[in-house]
Image 1 (cartoon, helix red, strand yellow):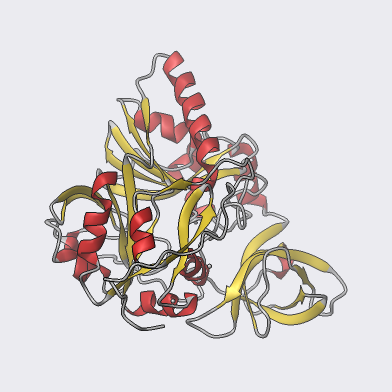
Image 2 (tube, rainbow, N blue to C red):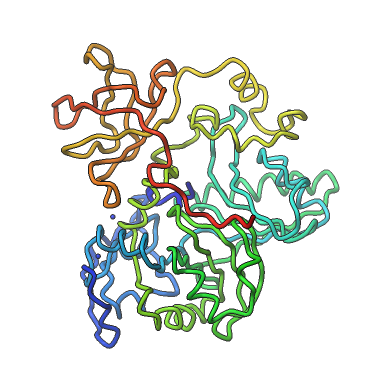
Length: 413
C-alpha cells in the first residue's frame, strides 16, 4: 500500500562490513517528477553511504535500492527470516490537532476514527468526489484531539495541498483543526521488519512490545531517543515503523544494527516484499481513476461510514458495493519471465484483452513470479487460467489468492 506504496513499490548472506566506507555511484540525479530539481537527502543519507548503499532518486529523495553486500533477493529473504531496516523518511509525516481533528479527517477519508480507541492506527484513503483514490495513508488516533498521519512521498505535494485546502475550509466553518507537516530535515522514519524485529527492538526500548499489537502506536524511548513506534509495515512481516528526530536517526539505526540479525535493506527488497504481501503501490496499483471497490479494498469503507454515506464519492462507492464493478484487482502467478507493469492480460484462449498488470516481479520466497493487476469482474475467481503478454509472447498465468505469502502480523489473542 503506502507506498508502502514504493512500488508498490528494487542483497548475499554475508555480514555487513560495518567499519568500511563505500561511496556508491548515484545512478540518477534528476527528480522523480522530472522537474529538474535535485533530489533531497534523508537524515540517513551519510549512513547509507557508510554501508554501501546504491542510491537512486525515488519520489524526489535519494534512497538506497540495495547495499553492496547483498543482492535484492538475498535481502528479501533475510527480511523474511530475520529483520531488516528500511529508510522510509521520504514519506510525509503529519500531525493534526484540534477538537475537530477527527471530524475533519473523516470528511476526506472513509475511516471510522470515532470508533477507534486511542493509540490505534488504521489504513485508509483520501478520496476524490468520484470515489477515486488520491492516496493511501495510515492514520493514528493519538486521542480525540490529536492524529498522526503517514502518507506517500510520491504524493507529497498533492497530499499537502489536499489537507491544507480541506482543513482551511473546515476552519472557515468555525471548526478547530490545525495541520502541521514535518519536513524530512526535522523528522526521520525507519521501518524495522521481520520475525526477529520485535525481539531485537525490545532490548532497546522502554515500551512493553507484547502489548503493542498490529496497528497500534505508542511513544517511548529507544536507545535514549524519544520516538513514536507503530506496529505496522509494508512487508507482510511483523515489525514496526519508528518516527524519530532527524538528528537522532543515525544513533537509533546504529543501535539496532548492533544485532547480527539486523541488516539494512533498500527499495528493491521493499518492493518485492510488499508485492508478495499483496500490498498496493500508489501510482501502480491504485490511483485517482480507481475506487476502493475496484481495488479490492472495500474493507477500507468502515461500516458506520457506509451507513452515513458522508465521505467523498460515497454515492458511487456505495452503488458499486451493492451492484458490483466491471473490473477488480487480483493476484497473478506465472512462470518464466516475470510480468511487469503494463503487460496485457488476455482470456485463456487469447482472443480477448481482459486487463492489465500493474505490478510484478520474481518471488524470492516462492519461486516463479507474482503480480497484481486488474481483470474483468467475471474472470476474477481464484484459479482462473489466463494469459499475460510478455515481450510479444502469451504466457500462461493463473489468478491467485493474495497475500501470496501468509501475513505474520502480531494480533494478540
